[in-house]
Length: 338
Image 1 (cartoon, one colour):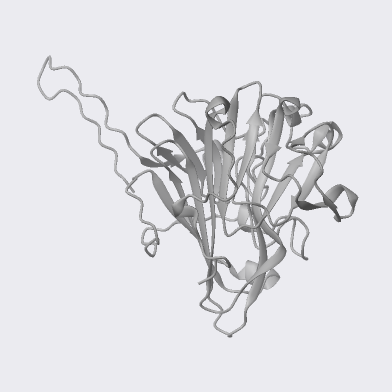
Image 2 (image 1 turned 180 degrees about the vertical axis):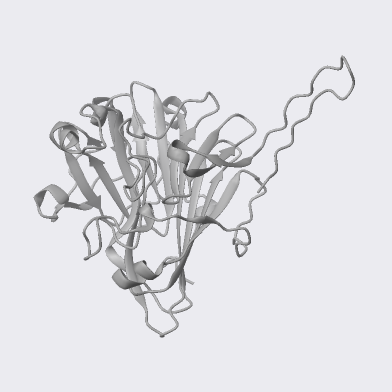
């Protein structure tokens, strides 16, 4: 952890020196929960709660919040935090017999002070490494030993990067399988002003129609009612274009072949106790995921899943969507398992 360093004028009457940036700061958040604040020299920031290993804030250099967190979010275990980037592991949704979206999002993680080296070292200091291991109670409901290491980092330009490394540490020689998602809630001007590009012509499972399989017919995804789909075999890059804000979110991912697109719309919004009735207008979920094909790890094997989020002016982004371009540090092996 980087230590705080505050400099003041050391001579009487000398002008105070500017306070040195603290790239990583551990402090208390809502309801006294532990959180880590990351700051980048240009003014971007991110916040991560140890409860859930949950990113709850990502702000640009102007201090504008880029992630959506509900005003009704309950920051109190065992309830998961509504918004930000919940981690769905070892199960997405009800694809299995565990609780909805698995248990990683409502467990207490710890700061990993001595993580194994990353394949691509970062010179940036605004990052934190967290680790989750199963409790005895977890092993009763999902009898597999694992180490889940999560790095949350802010890039020099304010990009938000999450890297998950999940290792099978079973001593009994047994493999395990899981599904996974970064359940990202993006903050938008109005759902009617948003479109998602990069998923056209792909097959998807429609969660509103018993996961029946369809092929996307539109040249972009737009929102006129509740939408809940799992797109399959998706490109490494997806764009969320907000016409009113003239801003584009670019989602880059590695090791995560699927993408979930979700907006609850008005009826479902009213049914959620930790979600405002009209808040569906100001959020959209586009989630990098591995769902259709479970990930299977033998003992000693490790899977890596990467997510990088950028926010750029739409004028800059226009026409730049190239699904074949994978930024170097997101290039992971085809099966993402080592």
